[in-house]
Length: 251
Image (cartoon, rainbow, N blue to C red; front, top):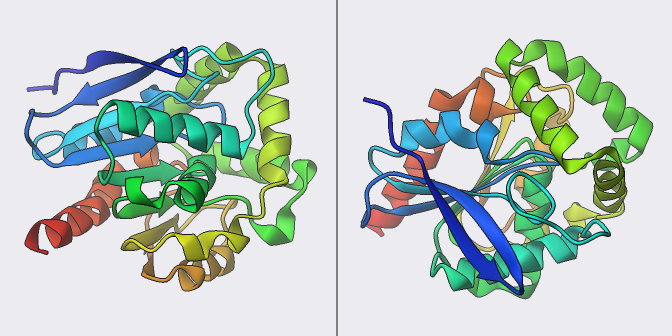
């Protein structure tokens, strides 16, 4: 039987933030943070794998999915402050955080100003590789990744990108490129797994290993799949997430 997805709306700093919520009440909390331009929709395959034993909330950050954003695109700090406000408003501080791609930068920045809200974390395909921090190199890598993903992801991503609009997408990309995430990783002190898809052209193995090594309590894992592991390899990523949930529960 398919898990029922519930739409949750929470007013945070004047913005009506949307989240898709799956799983039983009272179960361990999991919060998913999408990447550039993406909404809760591309996280649903992973959320459905976790929902039988966890309460999973996939949040749409301001300007993306069903959450309206300001006229000017938020930078990484603006997005992480919005995430912090939503975590406090929904009493989800300390939940397991699962981020993909640019969402990893948002979670890392969250640790800088609101470490009390950080639970264990899964950083799947963390951007931006410091050796390729230019727009044209990232676009080329994204184009190389597209045929390696499940074909249905292109429909989901196209819908989300069009919803966000080209101006917001371009401005957010510029903010992400200007964010040296490697300088902030030492703030993430909770148990964290950096996961890379074995066929991911956006996040090379060397970069993913570097990210894991810079974390105070990090480890590296590689699973079969491309960049959007929450969509292309949800079973494998769910297994990684469950290992952290089990660790926290036994601790």
